Length: 488
Image: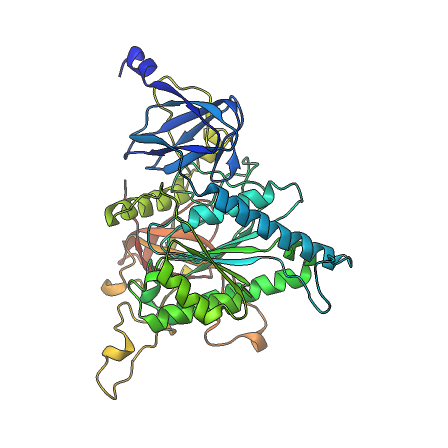
């Protein structure tokens, strides 16, 4: 494209109050948006006038304005302005959650609200967001958290991701949680919840978050629901411990995003789906369930939980995009490569001084380390058998040779190890106190990072590993999942 063509690509939109500009990007394209004047936000994160924001990696998002604005952008793949949005409903929801925080803080400081009756102890909002596929639960969670941290009350709500098909702050196959103290920027599905300090450069000032991450290793909760439930409860125990030590932080509350299989049961049985929802409610002490655009699920959850917590049906945005499996697979690869190499977005022709989420693009680039280690340097496990039929599918009276929860040591020298191009989660070191060690301790250890096995040298008993930063793996424990590395 010549420079004249690049100039033609620059467009300007004037948005009326309470409307939003929606866009979708094709593979290999980027979009640059600048707020000319007025007020605008992307999923609750405010834009700064005059700053150019880059979007890429097939990002699908919207710029919303409460008071009206003018925005300039390079031409995206699909774009339109909508006057019909559920933002007023989401804003009212935020106000209700904010009131819960304020009342909980007042009670903590010994001055409960006059609205609270005798014996009433107001709780901070602990919210579970559930909805079917392609309903926008993640966007709603991000919006509610962004509004909370923008409220000017120094809130640091916890945002938890229970969807293993979404990379969140790490890579697909994980569940995680992080306290949020600044608005989470949206710029790419590679970083759906912002940049984490575990792999982001230290130069990033806004959203270099510190998540607690557990490795599940699969994209579907139905692959090993027993392990998934255990990890949910592990994360809940850690959150409890955090709140016990930080009562001020606890009043900021918690927002929990969930996979679509919690709503539709796709890939899981109804019993499994209900058990995992119950595990979340119990582990995180949920007091509010938000059901996004699903009448039947709302009735079901009202019946199950309406007597002791609040169940609210909220509208689904008309801007939500139907995502097919090929798109999801491309996003998996975007997320894996972003974890290793950082976020690389080239601005459209003619665009200069652009930012990624408000930061300099160079701050997002990583230089991964490729090293060679001996087979015996890294202790590798697989949890359960590699492929496992449901218990109901076993012959009558038959039992498993390997249970779903059993760690199985992998010998890299065996041809069937399937380590080539495998994604491994490196776990934090277990306790050194032998009296506190137990057989399944590996199931309860958080992940400290991830690496890729790029080459196996069986005769030399060595393997080459790729990681986002340098560091010895000698003596470390790692767990393999079902995700594989693919070069782009």
